[in-house]
Amino acid sequence: MAAYPLPAVVAFACVARHGNFTRAAAELGVSTSALSQSVRALEGQLGVRLLARTTRRVGLTEHGERFLQRVAPGLQQIDAAFADLDFLRDRPAGTLRINLAAVAAEQLVCPYLPEFLARYPEVTVELFVDRRLADIVEGHFDAGIRLGECLQRDMVALPLGPLQRQTIVGTPAYLDRHGVPATPDDLAGHACLRWRRSDGRMQPWEFTRDGRDFEMEVDGPLVVNDTVLGLDALRRGLGLGQVFAWQVREDIAAGRLRSVLDDWQAPFPGWYVYYPQREHLAPKLRVFIDFLRERLAGAPCP
Image 1: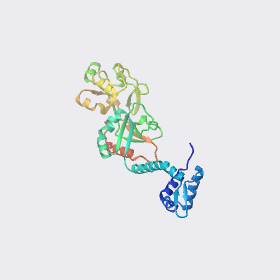
Image 2: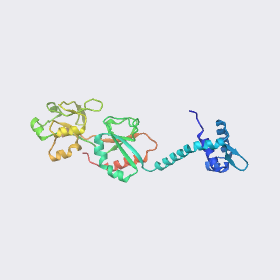
Image 3: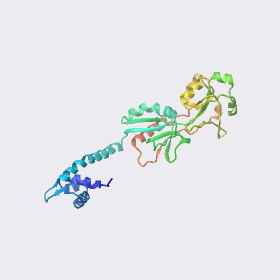
Image 4: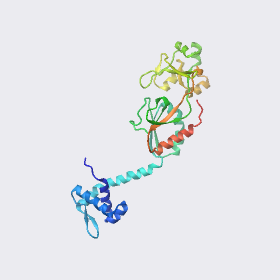
């Protein structure tokens, strides 16, 4: 495809609209001689005369009129594109695409969405729940929300929400039958719910003792890759499972589940919202981040 001098085409269209080089030059902020040279260079590249010049006026030739009819719609679209950017530059509007884990959506985003959407009616939020650690740039997402240990490199990352804590739970009936483990080593005799990660590996159970973090592989008759299925299995007494504490807060309060090994479960840095390095942050993303951080500020560790 040939490279056409768009500024010269704009200059030609402006002269044709005014029928005068002086007025067109004033609008474009250039000298009359520079504008005339630009149009002549365009005519030279095209090999036809576009403007008929006299001492009193400037008019279109047949070629010029035909050329203007063809380029005018495109120039109008370019003007509209710039106007659209001017409209959106300083106001939150458009579609905001967020890639996040299901538990992050449930805990951090969905409870506050009604208020956010009411405050910013020109923003459409698309939540893409993804078990994989997707490349948000390749996927054309504005931002992602993940735990700190899962963040992509070369991203701006801001903490979002309180510290998190995991807990190990089982039904009272299960614990009555199989006993309450006193240390992680006691889990060897228990049916432990196992989580398969998106990369195909099993998620080890995580513990902290005396400031030292460590992981342990557990065993059990059930493997799941979905939080809803896992929580349902635990509530049905199929064994013990390690979950976020906030997910089972009501179950523990109601006596449906009991927590064990609490002394081995320390709080840890929670969720982060992250996005690519950008010189100009889109208003729709800026207000989304500010809104969530404001709502979640000071929230206690669950």
